[in-house]
Length: 246
Image (cartoon, rainbow, N blue to C red; front, side, top):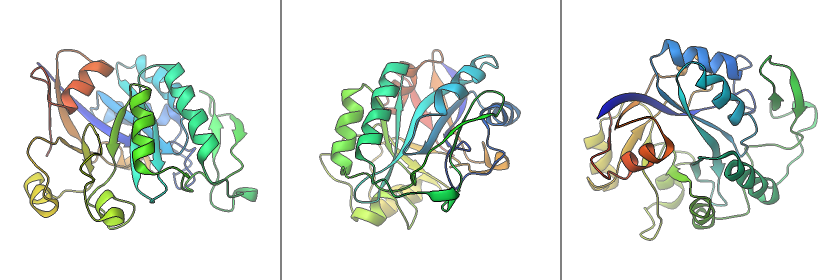
C-alpha cells in the first residue's frame, strides 16, 4: 500500500464565505505546496467549480474528489463526492431543484462566482448557496448512493451544523462512508465523546476557506493507487485499504 496525504474539505471562491484568493488555480498550487495528494472540493450546495479544479490538479498529480458540502433540511452539513462528470451534473441538478432560493442581491451574503481557469467570472449564482435544502439527511444520503457517491457527515464535532449538534445522535439506519472531524481533537476522544465505534473511519480535514488553511488538518490514506474506488474502499476499510487520522 502507498500512503497519500488528503484534505477532503476545501471551498473555492464560489462559496459565499470563502476568500477571494480561493481560485481553482490557487487551491491547486497551495495543495501542492502542502504535500497533498488528494483533495476534496466541497462548496456550499454547489458543484460548479469542482470539475475545473480536478482538471487543473491532474496536471500536478493531485487527485480531486468533486462534489459539494450539502446543508440538509435539519441544517446538518454533509460532504458528497462523485466519480464521473455525469454523476456530478446530476447531483448539481438535485441541489438546484431542492435548495431554498433566498435571493443574494448584489452579493449581500457574499459573492458566489463560477470562474474559469484564468479566474474570469463566468456567472454569479443569484441565490444564497448556504441555505438549507428541503430534503432531510436520509434523502440526501440515498441520492448520493443512487449516484454511486461518497457520503460523509461533515465536522461532526462542531457545535453548529454538525450531525450531533443538530440531531443529537447518529441515526442507526444512516449509511455513510466516514465521519469528518475538524480541529486537533484526538480520535480516541472523539470516539469516546460521541460513542463512535472503531469500525467507523474518521477523516480529518481543514474545511479551508482561505489558502493558508489548506492542508492544515489532514488524514493519511493507504491505497494501492489513486482512484475514486480505492478512496471509497479505504473509507470503508475494505480490502486492506484504510484511513489513518492524526
